[in-house]
Length: 289
Ligand SMILES: C[S@@+](CC[C@H](N)C(=O)[O-])C[C@H]1O[C@@H](n2cnc3c(N)ncnc32)[C@H](O)[C@@H]1O
Image 1 (cartoon, protein in one colour):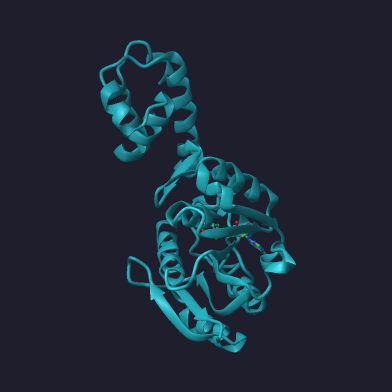
Image 2 (cartoon, helix red, strand yellow; image 1 turned 90 degrees about the horizontal axis):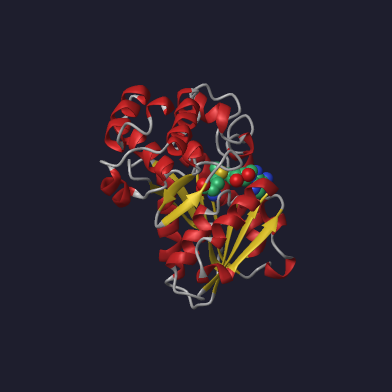
């Protein structure tokens, strides 16, 4: 493909890339990335000739996609709510269903006096915590983002730099679940939110592109997929303030078990919320007042 550059336009290269990768939308994303344009700029460039440098960049991205690497890692970015996040193999690719977790947190804190303290445990790219900082009124919440993976925290910090002023209220901690939080926060957190690993270690239904490319620390959680939810639910009790909320994402088959885990840990008002496909996807519970 690179040989043809200098002689062909972006429109022609987009068409031939679509034939190669078998997906017009993916081809468009790759061409936009190679051209350094956003979507609107790319439309204006369609009749321009492709430079050799852009052609080579596109060529190497196409090879990676054909090898099975997720297009999000190949592009190095992915959208989550209003954020354009940097993503690479150090972090899970943020999923659309997780976007709803942010709405539940915003809804809960709206009923409580500001300033709020929120903990996003297992933050990965920072998708949840940084969205909260960006969408809640400026300065109304301190958001702690923790992860057991130092690599993931590096990505979250880089993404925090991209959101500007709201990042002044971002806090980062390293450690397993609540161990990443400073002790003085015990008993004072308004919301603990987490999208923990929840896939059973021997789950046969995981796509190869997930199993081979995404970090296993972000995916797998013991033989039933519930090890991390058990641990963090037990720990969260000590860190939340009275009336505070724990909300986690889970597998759509895990709702009943997670509800029991929450009740056993002492949470009240435990509810299951569905995702956009109407599958049970989140469990929320409250610390008694
Ligand atoms: C499913 S990913 C979610 C990432 C991000 N919050 C999102 O929704 O896209 C789970 C995250 O939990 C982190 N994690 C796994 N085990 C952990 C532990 N014991 N303590 C803290 N974080 C952990 C992983 O490194 C990963 O970043």
